[in-house]
Length: 509
Image (tube, rainbow, N blue to C red; front, top):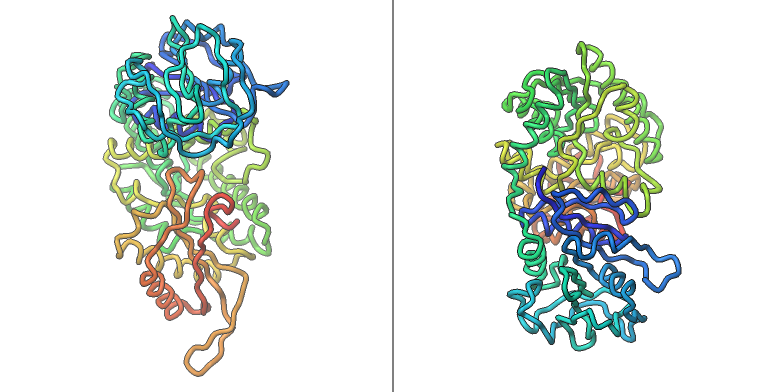
C-alpha cells in the first residue's frame, strides 16, 4: 500500500481540490467524511481537515475526536478545520467583523517555521470564511497574519498541528502549493513516489491476484474511463477480458465504426452490437429527460445482459468508476438526493449477479488520462471530450426519432470537425450541439422557411464540477453557423450558449 494523506471532509466545496493539489505532488491521498474516519494504519502520514459551510459556533456543528489525531500525526486544519482545532482548545471564535472573502496578503510571517518555508512576505492568499479566530491559548503560536486577520496561521507548540484560515488549494493563493508541499513532504515526510507508472504496475499486479483465471465482461463506451479500465485489465488477464460496445443509435456520426476500429488496434477483445432499433422503439414518444434516461438504461441492461450470457463462466463485471463518483456516494451530506439515471451506474451488477471490479475508483479524471498515456493509449481516445452516457438523446430536447438524430449528428460533426481543424478542440473541455424544440422563420433563396434552431455549447473546465463557457472566436462561430445552415437540411438558425456552471449545467437535460 502506498503512503497516504487522509483528508477529512466537513462539507467544503474545495475538498476535492485539496486532494487534487496533494496528488499533483505525487503523494496519494483519500477523502473521507468527518463522521466516517478509517483506521489510522501505518501508511497514513498526515491528516488534513477541510473547510465547511458550517460554523463552530453552531450548537450541532460537525466535529471529531481530535485527541485521536493531534500529537499522533501531523494535522493541518484549513479554514473550518483550523477554527475547529482552535475552538476545541478554548480559543475565541467570533463572527467576522468584516467580510473576509477574496484575496488578502500575508503581512507577517514566521518563515523559520517548516509550514511556511519559502513563502514570501506579501504573498496573496484566498480567504473565504464567516468566522475569525480571535484570542488563542498560550500553547498556540501565531505564525502568519494579514492586515485584517491576526491569526491567519497558527501552530500548536510541541506538536505538528497547524491551522490556516485561508485556502492554499485554490489558484488564487499564489504560493498555496508550496505550503501544501511543506506540510505533505517536509512535515509528514511523504516520499512523492506515487506516479502513473507506479499506479499501473501496482494495479496490474493487484488485478492479476484478484481475478486469476476468471473471465471479466466490460461495457465499453468509447470514452476515456472505460478505455483505460479495459487496458489495465487487459494487461492483467489478456483475452479473459470480454468487451461489449453497444450502438444505441445515439452516438456521434460514424462513432460506432470509428471506435471499434481504434479498439482493434489496441489488441482488445471487443464485440460491437448494433441495437439501434431497440433503443428507438423504447424511446418512441418520450420527451421527459428522466424517462429517456431510464428507457436507455433499461434497454442497455437487456442488450448487455443478453450478450454477456453468450460468454461462458463470466465471474466479474468491470466498470470505469472514477474517484469523484466514489466521493459522491459517501459524501458528508449523503448520496445525492437526485441522481440522473444512467446506464453505467445502478442496478447492473445486482441484476447480473456478478462481482464488480473498478480499477480506476481511486483516480480523478486527469489522473485517468495520465495512466492512459502510461499505457500508451492513443491520444485520439485520451483527448476525447466527455460525452453523456445517454448520448444525443439528452441533446434532443423533444421526442427521439432517427431523423432528428441524423440532423443533430450532422450539426455536431460540423462543429467538432471545425474545432479540430482550427486547433481549438484541445482548448475546450467539452463541446456539442443541442437540437431545440424551437422553430424559427428564415429566408433561403427566395423562399421563407420555418425550421429548427440548434444551439452550440462549448465549455472550459478541469473536471466538469464547475465550467465556464468557451470564448470561441467570432469568425469561427460565424463560419460554423454558415456551414451548418447551408449543409444541414432542417436547420435555419444557430445560437451559442454563453452560460457558466453554476448556475447552468453543461448539458441542457
